[in-house]
Length: 217
Image (cartoon, rainbow, N blue to C red):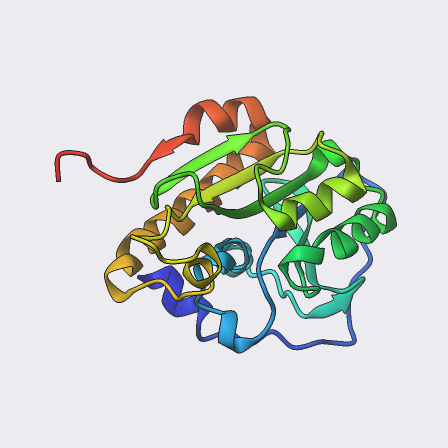
């Protein structure tokens, strides 16, 4: 659980300094979640976790608050990237992502959104080139601002057990037994994002879509 140990030892605080990027092609990598310490370990915040893991891997400081998001910029796989975590709460994520994309002049095809997916089992990763929200309120909000033609990384969290309400399930922390697989998921999400930046969404889909769970175990 090296990735998780790094993440939960970090603090996100606003900072005054932020280097402006040049006019080269840019990519906006967005992780979805809810702001605040009480939501930090929630299933719904796996998008935040993935972007934090990416920032830690490339030593990108995500510390500036801009357009209702915590943002950081750097280079990944020789590409200029802006990492963003909307601070609007999940259901209004587009209120941060839309203005950020416009400010940095990032076209929708270069906006990659990472988020939790109830309809995929935990341990499954699924990239898509474009599409609808699939019932995810954060994605609905972003689509209202950008349209549907932007790529995304869906990280499966599975369905709630028994009669447990969906809101209670997604706002519940991952269990202790989930943490080893969660660490693997975050590591694979980083690899998928790297492939997307280096070789495009189609190769990223063919290479990384699938389950990390060993069916024979």
